[in-house]
Structure formats: structure tokens, C-alpha cells
Image (cartoon, rainbow, N blue to C red; front, side, top):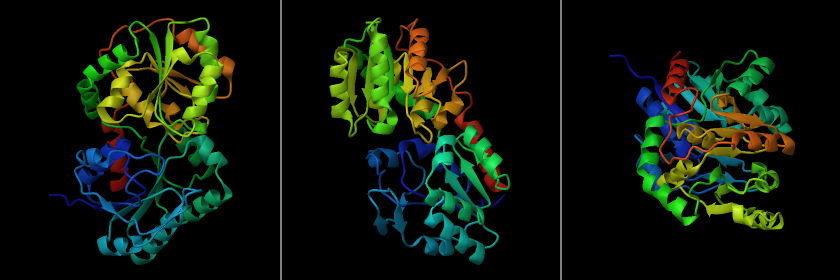
Length: 372
């Protein structure tokens, strides 16, 4: 029997779209995972529901400081965990002080241990990050054995600018079987949405995410207002909450499209996934988006995606499952609307997945990479 290698992971917080990644790593290795926050800083998820889906025990290293304005944090105790577990493989997150000191300590104390970091950069983020992050990146590259990137475009960028660092792509995607099972369980919820908002026979454009500036929703409303003026059978549904909600409602009223825009609120689990069954197209208009897990969810549901070309998840879009666009070009997006909404699927049935690859394929590649 082949002994599993010991894997130690430090991560910021556990989000629903990372459940399958950590479960699979726990299956493939003798794994210990420590999270530095008990929930995401940007939004609170139902952690009890998440924990029910895990095959490992949640562990936390929360002692330290959080800098609210920058999102940065300092944690204590992680070096002791490295010494205690003596891992064969260590995975950190991004290019920060925790990653740097973890790598430096490990290379001194456990020189045979391989050290990697997860990096969610899109090309835009990689190119335009702060000087502090750029410095941290250079310092970490002196010590790291490789980086695990979230999308193919970012890997091309890193291979071009840092050809000596070993890379692999492990996109933020989920197990199709698990997500589709939840979507099927929410069939009756989709019916309720249709009845509540009188959406029978309507063309539906869906957005899911935080209502914040980088999601570029003011831009989306302005383009949608031009389209809906000639196409009254179309509705835009915004699923989520955030600091811009009141302003976005005001903008939709000013544009006189409030009857065609639904601010549905924030949902999780079945209540969230039920919205994908309602949609004809999904849109992610962000001006800055490291990846965009919602694109994966939409494609799993068989819903084609209109995706910002600045989002990391745009690497999954091809001629069979959607289209990308410039999130600063209104004419570009309007032309796409005019082309894509010419037909309606006319069914709430779960469509075949539109993902260009499966979770199983990509996680197998990552496990092989780490074992090497």
C-alpha cells in the first residue's frame, strides 16, 4: 500500500465553491487544513450547511489582526503548525507575509518539503496589482516550488514574465454531480420564482453576485435600458446584495426600466441554484474579477454566459457556451444582447452542462502535480 503524502494547507476562509477542492485534497493526501477566518470577509455564508458537505474537520487559526480597510491580516501560530505536522507538501495563499515566512521557515527547517501557493489572479489583477503585492510576489518566488493558478490566461502571463516558476491551473470549479443534484432538488423553487415575478414566457438575463462597484452593474443597467426599450419581453434579474443596492434601484428608476429589473435579494444553496433554471443567459460584467465561480455554476446548469473579458472565468468561455465582451464598451455589449436574445429556451428543465472540462479532470491534474 502506497503511503499518502502529508499535506498542510493554509487558507483565508472556506467558501462554498471550494468545498470540492478541499474534499478531494483530503482524499488524496493525509491532509490538515487551517483557515484564518471563520467566514468570508466580503459576505457571510451558512457555515453549518457548508460543514455538512465536508469530509474533513474544520480547523482555524484566527488569533491575530485584521486590517479592515485593506483586507490584509496577520495571523500567529502557523509556523508552529508547520513544525508540528512536518508536511511533505505545504500550500499557502497568494503572495503575502504568511506565505513568505511559511516558505522561508519550511525551507530552513524542512528542506525536503515542497511549498506552493494558490493564486487567484486574472491577467488584469496580475498586471495592475499594487507595488506591495509585486514586491511580495518577487520575494515569494525566491522560495516557492510552484504556484497553483486559477485560469489559463493567468498561467500564460506568469509563464511569460516568470518563466522559472513552475505553474499549474486549477480553476475555481465544482463537482458537476453535486451542483446538479442541488439544482434538481430546487425545481419547485424555480417554479415559485416564475410565478412570483410573472416570468412565464419572458427572456431572462441573470446576474448573481455582490452589488458592489467592481461588478459594473451601473454599466449593465445602462446597456440593458437601451436593449429593453425595443425588447419589452426581457427581464434582468439581479441576485445578491451589497452596498450599491439602493443606488442601483435609483438608477433603474431614473432609466425608467424598474419594471424590467428584479432585485431578488441574496440566496444560498437550493434557493440560489434554482435561479439558474430560470435564466436564458447569465452575465458577469465585472471590471475586476479574479475568477468568478458563478460562471462555473451557470455553465454546469447549461446556461450560456456573457462574460467580461477581464474576469478570470472568461477562460472557460468558447463559441459553444457563451461570449466575452469589453466591460467598458456599451456598444459591444448591446450588439451581443441583440444577437443572443433572439431565441428563448422555453423550458425549466436542467440543460446539459456547457463546461469545457470537468472538475474530475482538473483535480486529477492538480493531485498529480503536487505528488510529483
